[in-house]
Image (cartoon, rainbow, N blue to C red; front, side, top):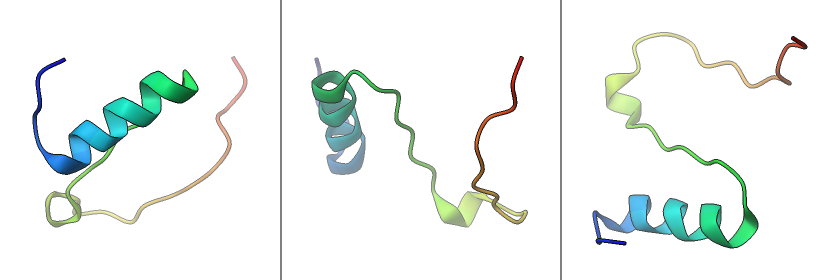
Length: 42
């Protein structure tokens, strides 16, 4: 897997090791309130 940058590489390594999906976002590009919640069924 090619190296991208430190944060992306870390997310990729954890994602592969733990078999989970991870994502990272640059907060300066987010212009609305964030919400952390359980996913909706369906």
